[in-house]
Length: 172
Image (tube, rainbow, N blue to C red; front, side):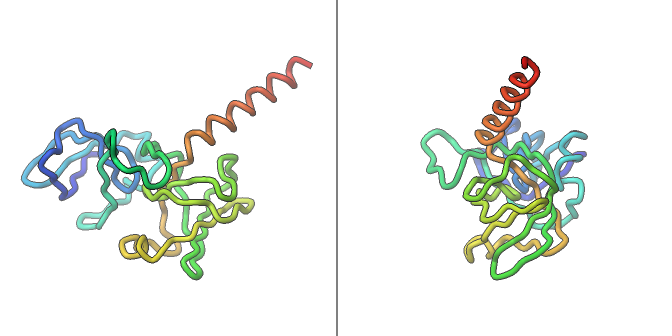
């Protein structure tokens, strides 16, 4: 799926990485102040990009450069799955995504490219608290789907432990 976004800083070039709703995309064309991307089937299945509407406002972020301030945790834009906002109360958002081994309280998660701290983990959902500054531009509500990126170090640790435990059980 090819799509375009009105966003054209002077130093943007074809091949540059840009996060669209937290999803890492490569610029494939720049025409008249619009940058274009192509999303492959894998990306469309795991993300909300296939549901974008013409004229919809989206979160756009350039890749960090060496020397840039890092506010939050490292994000790659490699989305693991979609989550659904199921409740909002006093700026606390509940996101349902099914069971996940990669979430823990005070751990990190990214929602549509926002680096956030997990507040609470439940059986099939988790909560995050959004500050007023973030709420100035984040306009999603109950029932909306969001892109979920787990912390890559957490994934590596969990998968390593699973592999080690699995190998230990098999060798008994």
